[in-house]
Amino acid sequence: MTCLGLRSIGFFCSILLVNMPFCILTTGNTVNINDKTIALAQLTSPIMIEDDNDFDSYGFPGSGTAEDPYLLSNLWIEGENGITISNVDSHFVITDCIFWTHTGASIENARSFTIQNTEFRRHDGAEAVWIYYCNDFLIRNITIYPDSIDYFSFNIGIYVLDSSNGIIDNSSIINCTSGVGVKGSFNITITGNSIIGQKTGWAEGVSATISQSVISRNCITRTSPCIVLSSSNDNIISENDCFEGGLGIVVQESQRNEITSNLCRQNIYSGFYISFGSSFNIIRENRLENNKEYGVKFVSRMNSIPISNQVFRNVFISNNQGGQQAYDDHGMNGFGYNYWSDWTYQNDEDNDGFYDEPYPIAGSSIFDHYPLVNESLVYSLSIDSIPVPISPREIVIIITGFSLFAVLVIHKLSQFIDSRRNRKRMEGGATSASPFI
Image: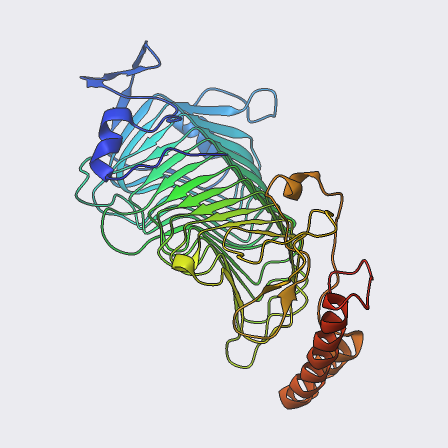
């Protein structure tokens, strides 16, 4: 996936993003949405729905079933708060509305609802959309942006807390301090969204503490990080374009995530930043290009070491300003079958598609033992996993709480043995198919 590289927030005003769901031109009490003129009911006081009966009290059409949900549509809402809905079992849809409010739509303890085709506009505020303790929801084709490009409209575009089975897709979020925040939730899909950070200042694209979820096909720029996973397990992060931000994708205290087919380019720091004991993550088929620091960086924090992560079948192009393109400060992660644009030892005597000299990883004494001759091989190889340079004995030591010193001693011994094996391989004395022998 490749996104439009917007270089100034002012430029977006002329194009309103290539995938923005609609453009609104206000004329009295009507708006033009996709060339259709729709009458709006202008409201200056908030809508407060605290049980299922309140839908009827407001006179919203529908019966609250899946086939006939309550319909909150064609509303222009101004004032401090917009729509607050809590403790309901009825199905409902918020659609074709404009919020010019401090807080937009706040939904708590609800299920089976949709927010779609709606704009949230205001110079100051909190969350545009706030979801708490909800299940089975869809947020689609919404737009969050300020009326003026000099300020941000909401501190958080969309915030989801302690919820499940939700979809956030095809929405545009501009100039928020956090585009999409999801905490304590599972089975959440965040896909096809465009997120542009603030013109100046610090912002996050997608910030998530999730499990069994998907973050895919999002275009994220001018944020830092573009995507951050914290204490998140068993997720798929794929086909995102993270560019011209601070950090691309950050993973901390997270396990068993598949990070695949992402493009991280032209970021101020590293493309991927893995820390705080993240382990057993798979990083493959990503393209890391022209990041000012490393393409992939593993960093220990507070004696918490990222271990047993697999980095294979990735393309590294011109990261770290001509220096080594990957970094691992303790060497407890596996690298293999990657393409490195800077590798100067370009000799493939046996013509097997791998350079004969292994590629060194900065920060430790580990290698990619099978650097690819060209990047096209990344996508043609049928390798689904690689060994990692950390033994089962080391993992047992870590799990049983042995000292960090003991782990490092055993690990250094393992590295010494690996270096001897590699020397033999270079001399023609070893022919194992393993990238680490």
